[in-house]
Image (cartoon, rainbow, N blue to C red; front, side):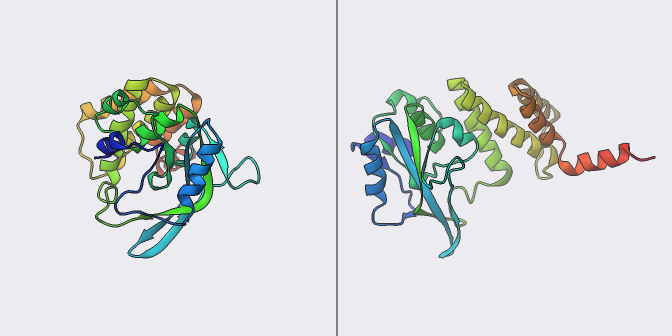
Length: 238
């Protein structure tokens, strides 16, 4: 549905609001489109949002600029490795940046594919203002897709993106989700995986490591803090 809806869009800009979410603020679209109109190099804008459950506000999700005192700030693709500034219900982006063959190139086209390709064409801009509400409920797409299953979904998505694009962003994203999946294989009691599947996951993880920091992350995925603490105590016994 998501893929088909994007193909049918004919306007100059596209804003997304999925069925169980809603927008807040009468000037949301005017503010975001206005910024895009004034800044040709900007390809996407996004904002803060509030989480709603059972009709009650749970929390506001707002990011702030760490580099200066301004609340609103620009970001690049690489910045999304640290924080996900582009919650789907808040984004407004330029139409025409995604070729049809790009959309069709992926087995499961999701918001990460959209944001990735749009930000490869320019920069993004974040408004530290609540412009939408994310409704969390048992029937939601991600509410029913949590834990180990969600880690598997993230891994498959990241693997496909890396195989297709082979750049540093998709590699680092795959590193993260490979390590998370490997950790779930080892330590989550409800996961039943074969020795072969475990070895394949470890081989994939080792193949992706490029830096000392990533090697450290792999160590944390395999040896959680509780186990390392016990090991240190054992090694320091008289």
